[in-house]
Length: 236
Image (cartoon, rainbow, N blue to C red; front, side, top):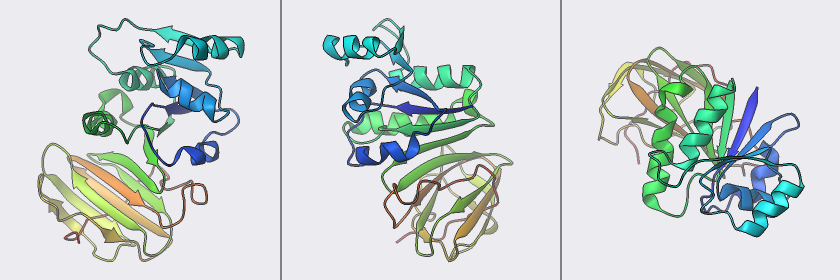
């Protein structure tokens, strides 16, 4: 099962959302993401959240088109996007695409990126997409294959602690079992030298950000969900 989750972040990539939403996908909106989706002709199957960011008129319009609602109290510990991710994982989604999760408030953007490390998402292909940028998280023992163009940028950022045993292929500055230290910028702005690059991680958490030169609408697939290794060299 493949799920597409639409959040309420402000981004210039909204026009590319139709590229990512495919027939048969379960489309889940996180609260105000439902209004953003509806404005672009996308009707979610389900809206999850406390609905404090969804105008009543939009809710009625969605209900009239068969959209379901999973309403949570406003006084809660989780963000609406976290609730949507938990629901998608609980329904057995093995691939999850997150749209509209960046832009707007910096704290929301950071929290949304950190949600990639949710324990419920382990073993699933989860990508956060914003225009030409795709972010995904590698865990200990995982590897990923990136598809793109020579010159695409790939940044490798340890999350929470040092990332150890990183091996990459198809990148200008390769890593061969190297480590990247948390809170240092060595892994920023590596470059693809082929149409495929690989990154493998032995230990830790590694945020992988692939920036394609082509618009997302022309290059919608930036990760296959299988890992090799991509150590970053010192960023520019």
